[in-house]
Image (cartoon, rainbow, N blue to C red):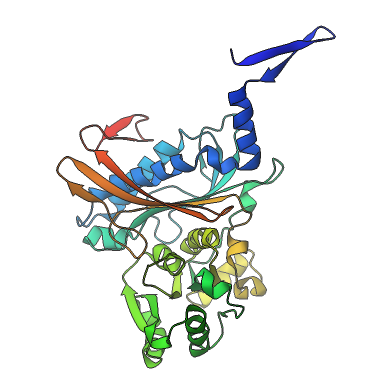
Amino acid sequence: MANVLLGRANGTMTTSPSPASRSGMAKRAHDPERLFDLDLVRCTENGALAAWKWIGKGNKNSADYDASDAIRGMFNLIDCQGIVRIGEGIKDEAPGIFMGEKLGSWNPGSPSVAIAVDPIDGTTPLAKGLNGSISVLAVATCDDPSQDPRDLFPNVPSHYMQKLAVGPRVVTSGVAVELDAPLEKNLKIIADALGKRVSDLVAVVLDRPRHEKIIRSLRAADCGIRLIPDGDVAAAIAPCLPNSGVDLYLGMGGSPEAVLASAGIKCLGGQLLSRMAPKDDKERESLIEDHGCRPEDITKIWTVSEMAKGDHIIFVATGISDSPMLRGIRYEDHSCTTDSLLIRARHRTLRRIEAHHDIAHKTIRLASSGGEAAL
């Protein structure tokens, strides 16, 4: 019996929720994200497993489609009202989950959430069979029912942003890094906060021609560099993770990835400074004329608190191939192993989840068919 009869008032029966119902309502009121945090891990697990079959096969769009299909399929089993704020297709018109799309059950009374998702961060490395690809998403839950979930993650209209990411020890050192400060000054701040020499630091930079000046400056300062071909969400978060071997991330990367990385970094107490970086005058004009940006909007420096608002934030990611943040999928005998992160901003709890999937029994929920598909 779901409810217990209390009595009658003016001919109307009143009821009290069952203990299970009271527990669910209390959980929703205090920590609404606890209702579905592990289900979000299943989303990125399924996305990673769906993408894995395309590793090294040169078809990144098919990998992206399958990962998106698996994430969407699992998400639609989750009891929430989700609005996608950061999705696919902004830079390269890839197939996938798009801004404004609705995910979740949308049952009345279920939590309203904003979603930032990249089914595969690092499609090019995956297509080439290289390291550096993950499946990643972040969810922000409204603090009160009147809040609009679209306010929780911004939609940054530029293709790229300039970025500088550091970990929590740098943030709490009392001396802040600055996006426009000389690189040597920032390196000194980071080294002092970490108790290292500048020559002991390791910076991650996307291996792009646009970063030649940064790379030369880092080498001139005797700072170690790890060049990556793609996948800067994991790279930006790496300075916040224990034993990652990464002390800072800098350079210019995708704007959607800046929002996703900010959600993870906020959950861990680090900082990501980012600013729109128009590629040329044509994009700058488009930002102003087509997207309504003011000149001061383009020069604004964003922090993680502005990129990912509130304390009810969950960040989850699953490795597809090895990255600075996660191990990739490993197949052995009749099973495969996935490594995932689950991080919540409210208590800055980081969980590493190693899951072993029996290939003979494991299925993935697909949105395209509405059913389960074998690995």
